[in-house]
Length: 638
Image 1: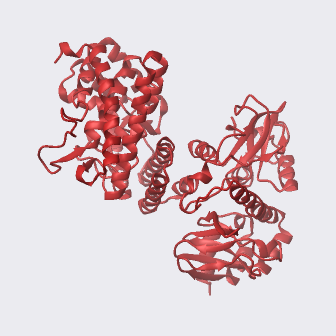
Image 2: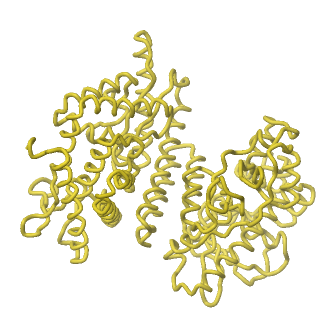
Image 3: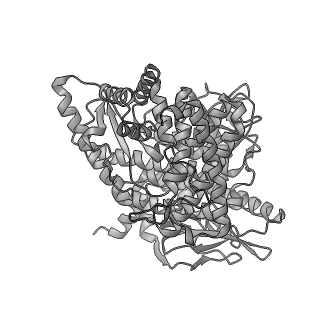
């Protein structure tokens, strides 16, 4: 009779290295000898200084923290994620543990007998190489980072204030092994095995032109797609993403998140046009907080349902709260969360497409609007999105549109299940009004611009901040071109857009009192979004449109671009950036504190410092609105 427990363990392990390198029969045999252990939050799996267990561990569910006790300090070195190996010391050395493993939440472990895997690694060089590399990464590099932190005399708790760890300089592998693009894949694999490394930089005359990783070997060689005698050039990833040797961990991690990669090439000046000085892998970055952006992105890519994505988004909220508590730069927080949100949206679309009865009939693109389109959505606010599809003939139009409406309804439903509420105004791709062909969108934009009613201008403030989340980039670029073509054929539209941008003046009255809502559900509360954030957003948008700056949607990036166009107003735009950052952080803090969008603030709950900080931001609003009045001669329109 089949051992169902062993089979379940096998089904899990075969998806993770190095178990994917072990033959099915051998892995099933190992699974039959494993122990399944349950540990409570706070329970110690093994302790630093203890003699090694006869097992090492794979994390099935939960989270395990690896801690190093040094000079009366307990430093969190790494958070083990689902599928991670830990406690490898008894497998490779027989001395005491150098770290403690403690459950950060309820966890399930697979305890694998050392003796069983020893037999495997003696027969399987690839498995042995992976285990050795994993052990060396944890044991050596994490230790040196922890020691350097203590030597700096920083009186911080890594568990509570992990951001400072992220701001440490990167610790990379200097003088990495390189290979020429013309060498064979077999030669590259032999080199990687010889040096126990998981990647090779591909170089030409000392300059980086690509990178080859063990993932490339698994996905392109082990599958038989490309022969071993093929050239490295056929499987390398190019161009290689580079970073400066003096960069910090936070920026390195952000580069990995932004580009969806696990390795960075370190060069003399940080560009791909300078000589290679090292290589930085994801394993080189300390995982010093419970939720690592790179790990979360990996989980997104593995998600199979809205339930999986919802769990991840909950962890993103935890990460967000920790960043805010630690005082992390809001620009850094925004980019990290925006990248994860974008990945989640793309994964939701992939899931829904897999459930459709057929492939998309024509190319399409999914657009995020509003704050997500500007990459400024931190809290779980409602969704604003749209869909554009390639033009088709009249005879197929209805069937094509119905296909994308069906898809859009599925996607918005998944996003809702994740936690992004349906838009109360139904500004979603599931609404036939916002699921249009390329030509229909062009006509819609042209209509709004040439007939700028109050409703049309309102739509423009939402739809002009669109960002491609998924699909055909050329379709999205065509939409952007159409917008600017229409604006420059009817430039008076910018005056209407500028007029709308000053409808909410600086939110403080004659006696220096906050202007609050006079009626409704939020009576006597301050509307942080409408009266503080949106005036800055709207001003940046209209000014950038006037300069035909089409590549910037983010408010801060827009003001930076404006500073280059108008150096005489650089101080004003810098003050707008500072105000926007302060207000966005404040809204996020309020939302996390009250479990809502953070939009409405009860002034009696604010202390004096908070009120003074907000008032200081209002001067930037007043100044940039005065600039709009003069620039677009709005006094003539009022």
